[in-house]
Image (cartoon, rainbow, N blue to C red):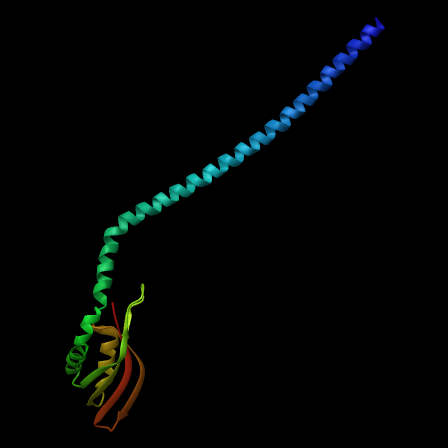
Length: 176
């Protein structure tokens, strides 16, 4: 009976130790599997949030599309096309007449064509003559108010002999 007892004790101890080992192995396996599944669920959740954000942005852009088309058309009208540069001198003379001055312009070199979103440029030299105090308002009008051409000036040569002002300016006008 003692041999039978020892044998049963060893079998039962083996079953208990084996059961514990299997339980630990199963726990280890399922812990790893759960962690992998949790990582996948988190990745899917991030993808879903990213997709929802992209869909919201797309919807906002689609709502703004009609307004954007209006702005795009307005921007196209803001700058004249290159062929309109032929009217630059006449435009300048008409603006000069409003301020009681005489103005003339001549283009220098070849125009630089537009590239991508950058507008084309055409350099010019402008001469202006008029009564004292009339050139500054004329220049202000050219650079701020008139929608005909957009101009910028890079240099000025100004003289005043108390009755008449003279100005020679180097500038740039822009086109699409």
